Length: 636
Image (cartoon, rainbow, N blue to C red; front, side):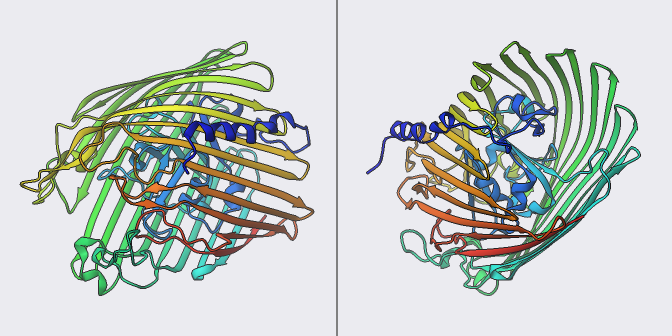
């Protein structure tokens, strides 16, 4: 029996809000002012002052999940669901508050890394060992970042050097199920005005068969290129920073990130029967480079000038038919001025230029476009009222101007209780494949496409003290002019059109409480992802989104030991847009343990899917069974 949507909401409120009534004040706190966030306003600020529904995955959380992929780690956060076509080396998609994976903007150190053909992101290439933290901003944020930020923004921040810190060296070596081996090492520090960091990682795994052999309706996956074997991977990557503060308030810095993945997978229907001869292999290379000059021009005026370069390349190798090669390049510069007009009021003015270029074995009528952007961001406080407002215009060389805005108000009712409301708009520009792909008998881009557009409203109620944090957020995001492929029944020619409308409604309840050496946290996500205008053969619920996701975790310290357990339940989803095939819900139990031998040497153990649950994220594709990863960590 299906429990009505708002009955779930009532149960969630009564389950987690009692945490507020049991608040204590132990020495360990849920959140401190040392938690700095950048993504919420494009300027560094304490997390406690940030506007919007934002989460930080910190360095410790990343360290506790050494054997997991970046998609796995992000997928355990509130408001997030993810899919993958098999193992950690395969394509992964993130649904942030139910938005499509190409409707969430993914950044590395503030630079967009989505590829230009489909708008997706190669999350599978990013090794968490090279990452310092991840910031997740939920809700439409195009007025801050431009295109793709309909569901929100995920900013992946690499390891950096820190001011006034001596040389620090670290290394990790881990081994786990499927002969998975991961090693990483790095150093960082700062001295005499210089700051620096360098990190590298290598990983390999025998993997598991990425396809299940059958679909949910029990038909064979052989026609889709299933080749029964283990699909493994090899990857390596590095990141580095170098900066110099040539006088107080004036800093110039370089950052670089590069990752390479050689991944086995199975073919597609187009590859059959060739994929049965051997595996298909994906070679993916992701690079991001930037130089940034930060200058305190006057006591109230900070200037941040940045030049960036991001490139991704995919070499899709089929055993008999050779390679398909695709790459995309984004060159950018931005100049942001942060003006502290009053101690409680800040105004930021941003100018930005991005040149997008695509190079592919597919044919395109156009292979480049330019975007010029201008944004204004206000952040201020008046007594107990906080406000953030933003306005941005993006001028595309191929389809004109897109104006977006956002306004958020937070009111501190007391030192512990806060309420807030926010509204924002978003858009997603059509990709190069949407607009310009040609040269195929059955697919052609549509240069008349309009961008997808959204209107997001949300409200929250939050309680927070030294040991407890509880937050309830309700939201609605209406998306129009969604781009889908439409086929002509006579010619079979397929082209994208702006035909769909969708509404994403939901409630997210999160809670965390620390009592002495024990921390308990949890979240409840209730989502109603509706197709507002289903066409022939389409259903009313967006595919692959669960309406209910529950997460709970407990962590306890005993001397040098840290023990933890996690539980996550994901409800039923539809495998197809027609809502005919249902993927069953599933519950996963994970266990963690860590032990510090001394100040320099420690061990972490993570056991995922303890009960060896057989579950499906995408119809026809496998998921990992019970798996263990053991890591030794050394630091100086």
